[in-house]
Image (cartoon, rainbow, N blue to C red; front, side):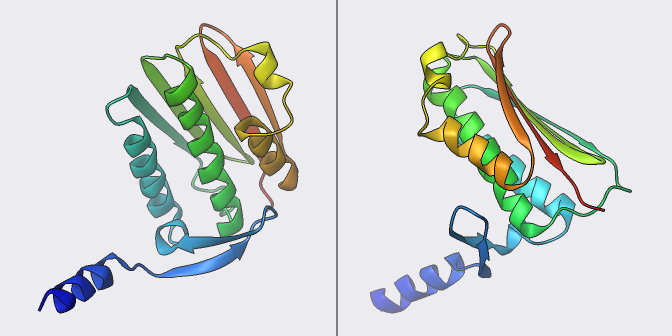
Length: 164
């Protein structure tokens, strides 16, 4: 009886998944990332909110030009990972009260993750490993760029081209 209950619970937790080669390896992607753009944004909101829970206030803004080209699934994986890493850094290191995530889709994708914390230390920018390096690598893979600045906290800006 207990085995049957456990199998039902596991079955309920399984979601449709598939593999995407994203330039950093192969990633198992759940169907929430592969649906319509608004479904992807809803999944991104859920994951960001979960990362912030109990630590700091999260603000999420989406600026979406619905006439812009669709964003391929492999690019969505990179967007999600970039946002997650930016938010994780704010939660773990910034001593912030608020983290703000902005996603803009138009002729290009612009991702901004900013916080009101202490600001990124110089030595963090000079390391060639870890989360910041991974963000920069993901941006480069997609032909974009990543930059960080201090302005009453830290602001990460990633700009990615969007093919028509």
